[in-house]
Length: 235
Ligand code: CA
Image (spheres, rainbow, N blue to C red):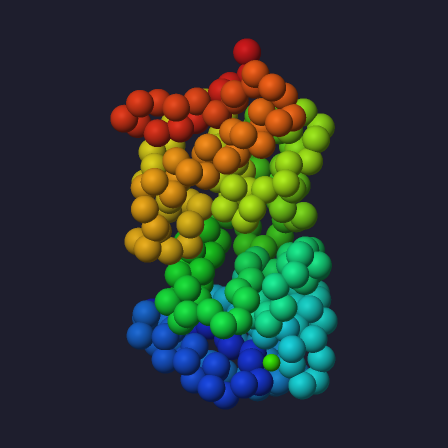
């Protein structure tokens, strides 16, 4: 394996591609650029990449179509770039096997942080991309549908923001385990350096309110003073 992880950028706008190439090189990756989906598929056939950054609007098809074709032969992680910030794009993209997405305009720093976060996840032995069951027993009153980014609490689907979803997912997958604020920042936010500790507290607060809206009196998220948060284990 080469020392630098190879990242394939499939993006038809040269200015965006240049920015991405520069940002990824600066962060220690070996990026390559293809301007069409067809060229991207050919590149993937010739060489193995650690990750693909895939534009949704390409001249020879949509990124979603190309993702499907990539998925037919490879589990390489895919980050979509989209100009449309709609839930439909997001769900469709993730159902097709995308691992994450960024809405244009985004900062190069945001992109490299996402790339690193995904590679950390996939290189820690977890199966890349394939929607798999959590490795540990999740909390019984929670049902996590990672493919659709939905968590049900006592059978009711919660309306969560992106970070609330990730936060609750981390806690609910390992009931009883205490996570420090730093660990939650690291696991949930792509760019922890730019966020504040208070961010975790604020999100825990809004998630709690949403859980109480479903089951008044229920407070499955426990605060451990000076330590962090955990999800109450089933008794
Ligand atoms: Ca485009």
